Amino acid sequence: MEQRVAVARAEAGNERTRAIRRLRTERLLSGVSPFLLLAVWEAGGRLGIIDVRFFPAPSFILGTFAELIVSGELFIHLATTLKSLLAGFFVGALAGVVIGLIMGLSWWVRAFLDPLVSALYPIPRSAIVPLIMLVFGIGWVSSAVLVAISVFFLVLINTMAGVMHIDRIFLDVGKNFGAGPLRMFLTIALPGALPMIFAGLRLGLGIALIVIVVAEFAGAAGGLQGIGVLIWQSWQTFLVERMYVGLVVIALLGYASGLLVDGIERLVIRWKRTQF
Amino acid sequence: MNSAGVKIHLNDVSKYFYTRFGTVKALEKVNCTVKAGEFFVIIGPSGCGKTTLLRIMAGLESRSAGEILVSRETPHQPLTAMVFQENSIFPWMTVEANIGYGMKNRGAPAGERERVVKAYIEKVGLTTFARAYPHELSGGMKQRVSVARAFAANPEVLLMDEPFGSLDEQTRAVLQEELLRIWEETRKTVIFITHSIDEAVLMGDRILVMSAHPGRVKSIVDVPFSRPRRVYEIRKEPGYGELVFDLWNQLQADIRQGAPQPQEIL
Image (cartoon, rainbow over the protein chains, first blue to last red):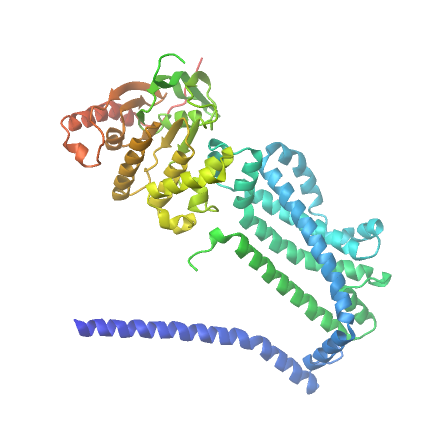
């Protein structure tokens, strides 16, 4: 009997070590692939297999990266892009959440505004770049406005859907327990819709990065700054390494802002976290 | 209000639902009075409109005809607070915040709220879970929160819609006793819906038996057993079996009748 217990324990131990080993291998494999790609790229460039005019070796790009940092040029571009991104995202998301909550709660506001949303939402954001530059001029404000509009619709639609999918019982509880309109809004509609709101914010972030580059491309000739401008001007002057620096920075920006939204979500939606 | 000691007066309360298939009479001329401090149980086959009746009293549904009179103790006390059948505690609020919800809506001072919430958390035995979120609780614990939330709101009338219907038998027995104990302490007027005859006899001072299609008052039965009552001990009381059997006889005809039929009115 005791022997059998010992055997069972040993097997459980084996199972555990196998699981840990598998996890380690998984992490190792996912960590290796990007570096392998870079190594192949580097080797290919140096050996002349890859055309370095289009695909300069990673080490060259890194060198240019360092130059742009030292000269401070990169930060000027980054600051402009960040300013447009943050301002546009904040304004668009806030307006989207507030109007989305109201539309989700009130059937008559929804009936009134729904046709406008349905009509305006499908217009490609890139198509209104000229219009926005006409109104707001060439500068970071235009990029911010474009970001705000793009984020606004996605957040609004998700927030509204989030409110409408809240279990009816919670609205009944609010009503029965004497919640007025403001308390219904703050204690039920907003928290109940939060998971969907964050889904909207994450989608909005992806679109925001796309439209900000488009807006900066369009404004590049007008003396604008920004990562998009860096990419565009580098292409025009055939400074391919600088173009790649712009690409890397915008990719990092997307990655970092994604992490930021995830972090805020974990902080705000504590009630959804399981176990840990 | 009319006579002293009467808390609720239902006067010809009717409810019709208008559907594509015709008009369904959910409730037809329901009349009864509930005394102050009474534990009043409504029992009936499913579809007899008992939940509809409770939702009308809770202000969640409109009535088609008739009137409901509630005699108020104090003007600023909420009229009703409901314990719902399904899981109804807010997943985004802690146990504490859920229980204090009604008080906070009413703008009760923070100190008073804390005191009352703490007292009810203790009464339902969730002190160690005061800061927990609902996803960390079992089904029985969630229903305890729901019961505590309704009591903490301190309404004129407590409404309970099969609050223990989805729990397993042992958990249900424990929660029934807890509810009886808390109710003995507060002696609030309770209207309690169930489809379980045993539960009705255990909890109620009087039992209103409803018939279905349309929902009508079939009879009102007194439960003679003394309090405090205990879940399994009450079955030893003389007359328990007869009472259960009598209630079953009243109900079974309606249960056998089957599905609701839309009917024309007027």
